[in-house]
Length: 115
Image (cartoon, rainbow, N blue to C red):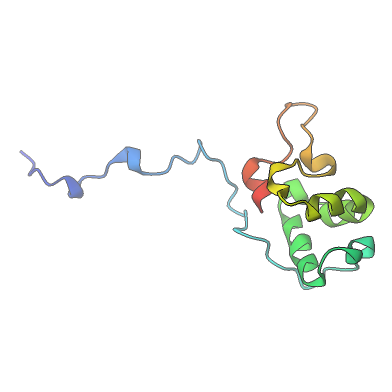
């Protein structure tokens, strides 16, 4: 018979189950700034310059692959969202706050929108 020492036996339910919380391995914990952020365009009127490399760094995440260009193209919508007192309670501007046509699921997960 085995000794009754509970800490020696793995408890399966205490380990994370990857298929329940699918987070791609390349998912950055926060925006990793890029060295070549490019021009900010009209975004420079309302966003601090030091944030732009972080925005462009998010483009490695498939959900945000065109984020910088979309922010430039829809600058007024992003400015309103950016300057809101509680932007985390608002949908992201543009396609980022919409649902996918095929799956009817949000294009970006709640976790992704926190980045």
